[in-house]
Length: 284
Image 1 (cartoon, one colour):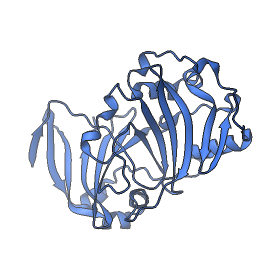
Image 2 (tube, rainbow, N blue to C red):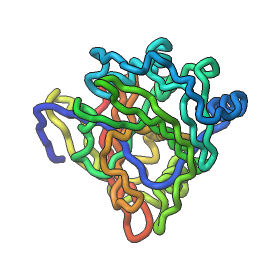
Image 3 (tube, rainbow, N blue to C red):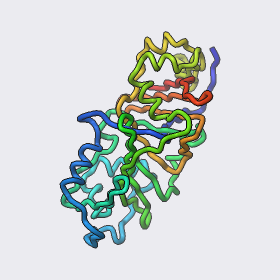
């Protein structure tokens, strides 16, 4: 067992590859689709919310993460920081959502956890930067192979939701990561077949608050632990980090909002197929 000491431990999460979804009754896509159908299309309407002409930046605009918390938890902020009528693109169909039809959207705060995806570890702190000008919140629907993107942009220092784009995720030449992960999370037999043995295991040192232990576990140990894995949809925030469908590495971070859960799963492409090979649990 090897000890690695860190002055501080910072783990974040997520970026995407090529595939997405939902489950019946839990998918935000359902509500949005019903909303679009009920509003009908508005052709190039000029009925924009005039309060967005010169939005005023507040303390919550310091980082996108700070803003997203306010946007997802306060209805007044959400209405003030959305450009109405909101452009909605569903593959090739374009429509606009009028302000009076908008329903409060809690994004990933509707769940007890959130996920993030990255292609490389060096991108995992990018969300702390305050100089980001554009960002996306994403729902990746694992079963239906769709991704729903909420497109935000800084305007006079203030973050604004400018559009939502719902589209199919393009197929990959090799195995699609999201198609793989859907099977990995929902099929224990498939999961077992796609695990490197042994798995590298990183966790907190119970004897030292500032130490991290690196060891290994075998496949049977992993399967017995029954670690929580999202089975229907993944959330992601795209700050501009690498997000390539042909990446040979994917890092999935799963964090609890209130329970201190902090798990990170590392995947790599071996040939054309994905393999799980490293697990970090620094929950507190």
